[in-house]
Image (cartoon, rainbow, N blue to C red; front, side, top):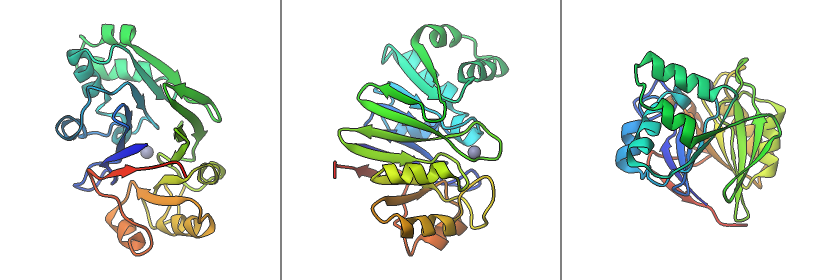
Amino acid sequence: MKVKIVGCYCTWFKELSTSFIIDDNMLFDVPAGSFKTLLTENKLDNIEYIVISHFHSDHFADLHAVIDYLNQHNVPQNIKILAPKGCKERLQTLLKTMEVFHLNQFIDEKITFIDCENNKIVKLGDYKIKCFKMLHQTLDAYGFTIEKDGVKLGFTGDSAMCNNVVKIIKHCDTIFIDTATIVENNKHLSAQEVLSLANEYKTCNFIPIHMTYKSRDYIKDYLSIPTQGQEYIFQKR
Ligand SMILES: [Zn+2]
């Protein structure tokens, strides 16, 4: 499996917020301000699947622009979006707010919305995806394991420490893990927590994402730091 880093920081930095393109056909999260980068540095024409971890703006806000691009370029014919419950309604509200009405027919006819639920397993083409409810304040936020060709990858989305973070780590060869803070809280994992998990679960490769400069600087001596545009190739172990 190939994972391209569209962005790997959190909102308050000049680098793009966290987003991935997986194997050219899956887009994982669509942060505010990411569309132009997605357009110039990545091929959106092959996107068939979109995964949204939760509806915060740094994960969801440019989805309308991606949908508009897919509509204009008419490829592929059908898109599947895996997201927390209510994604279609939120997208319709966004379009109404911005007075973009021409996409409603495309959304009705060409997009299938699949609701995340804790422990739900979803097949999207060759991908087997399992959803995990995360601890992100009180939000309906999800992490995922994504498997294909014997490769098992984990994505926490946004999460504080919880049992499901450990479940994802135990299941995966590599985890892209929220490392957004240096202070423990109920919204994000801290760099110290990520390091202690990496020390405990050594068979899993930890890649910090959703970083701040402080959390990056804390963890960079211990874990390798991704950069925008970087591509990882993962083989079956
Ligand atoms: Zn969030």
